[in-house]
Image (cartoon, rainbow, N blue to C red; front, side):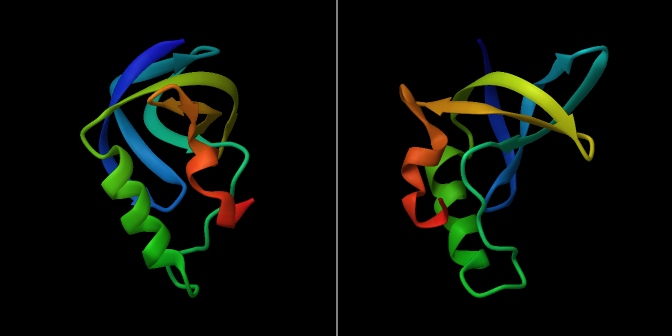
Amino acid sequence: MNSYRVTRVVDGDTFDVTPQWQFEGQTGSRVRPVNYDASELSDPGGHKALLKLRSLILGKTVQLDPIRMSFERLLCHVYFNGRELHTYFPEYK
């Protein structure tokens, strides 16, 4: 697994990293963790999920274990402080 610094939190379950990741011939910065699905920003709870993810990982280091691509995002297991990211979000299982 490679380590990346989180540079931007887009919503409660999508963020950008640096350096860019490489996976199956593609390169990018957008990441979508697996095993949880936060509310959209336009839905109730969406802004709360964004703030929670931002306070947790923005500017910090995460490890990515890629699974596949989806909509120009890398879907992967994301680890922060030795725990998979979804464990911080049991309300979105």
